[in-house]
Image (tube, rainbow, N blue to C red; front, side):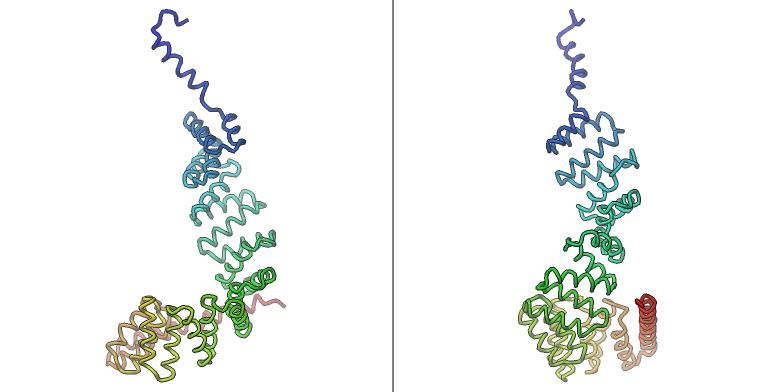
Length: 378
């Protein structure tokens, strides 16, 4: 058939046919996958997509092999291409959600996983991953909604229960948080960190003595547990047991000399003991360590105001307000400062803000109590 044709021309005519014969087929690519040859499999699927850019299944399989090699960014791109070609391709949204989750793209992962769960409401994998994605995105109320049934379905998964417990704690779902932390303590009663978290959950419910007991248990188990002595000190400080609070803050500073919160609250105690210079020294050290420590600025402002050092008081009070404009204490002190310096309009504005913030807090507290009352178990 090729008699008389130049040899080079014959070769050029044969090359396309030879290339087609040697090109990987889907069967060959699947065989590589079955042998665990993910890199070779990915190359085969990539070649197939180049020959047929409309093959959604090939893109999906390429994504799987890339994911197995932990090349999640490339995998996501392959899954998105498959999804665009065939939105009804089984499992594609779940795979895309998982790839996004693995990259820490939690909000993006949640979008795909919501769609995956809508397509298959019985998929516990999609439900669990969705809850974990919301947790990673710090959407704790949503996280708890999806993690709770997942945790019930997997009672032995301590990590899942821990995530649920912390989601409930951050979402201010007290009963859920307490229940989960107690379950975790049944498995690991000597976990100081879990006792601390249970203490936080109990304190949020107003169960101060029970919270204190949990913090004390944590301190006995692990005396050098970070923050534990500060937490005990804070509980005593809040109850106006200042001698006990001082001992705990000093103990925390013995373990961590740069613990700015312990410094600041010690400063407050020194001020209450009529030692303003010692108090200011501690508060100034605290803001050197943490320039955004609102409590320390507000305390310094109060001390300077009491000493009639208005020029020193004004900038630290303004700094406290800038860091959190919704706390009324610095507004009140600034209002007093303006009154003392004859700035009547500025004083009126700050004191009006104080009244508005206090009214807002009263409404929020009333709403919380109403919700608690309406949801109380009979």
